[in-house]
Image 1 (cartoon, rainbow, N blue to C red):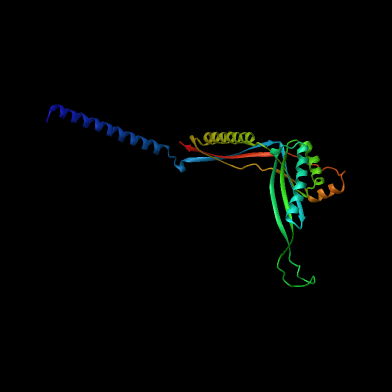
Image 2 (tube, rainbow, N blue to C red; image 1 turned 120 degrees about the horizontal axis):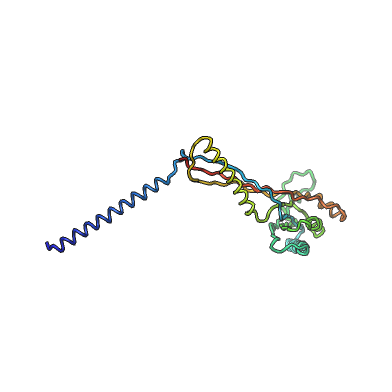
Length: 261
């Protein structure tokens, strides 16, 4: 064999073995690092704490509905739409923006008579259902940002044709800033507890290996009874209901797990 060819084969073999060796070493190192990063669950400790921030609600959500009954579906829809348009014009005139008005329900249902074939009230004759009319319920939710307008709006809704106000919910429009404050507070509590644990037990804590979060705030509800609306219709000088927004708790619960060294 030509010496040049033989020399080239030797060099190629050496180069191949070198590349192969580097590949094996790299593979082994990566596996080692992967194994090193796996935390034994029995070698961790977890601390849980709650952060709580008190915040003033900045919006009031009012849900109400207009109900109309009649014999013909088209007439019921027309009458109900007219009433609702009057209501929407009223709330817009009161300063409520279109973005803060949302339709939540539009339900047209037939009304049945199950006694039409009975000649006496104590008759046990079974009647097939007979459509005698229709009922349309349209629900709307509005956000009120100026709390000074709440009583005027609530009092005026019944005069505009609203049949029912289901509830008033005082809440915070954008809770993320307060939520972050609650998270920081919870994390600070956990850090203090972890430091105390380590100091009192002489157990060294390593890096944080897991963080879990739970708990969300709920709006504060104020029920508005239908009877109050009846009174408002009967007496235009009725004293406004004393609605208080109060404070809302924004909470965050964190569970932080540390590796044990």
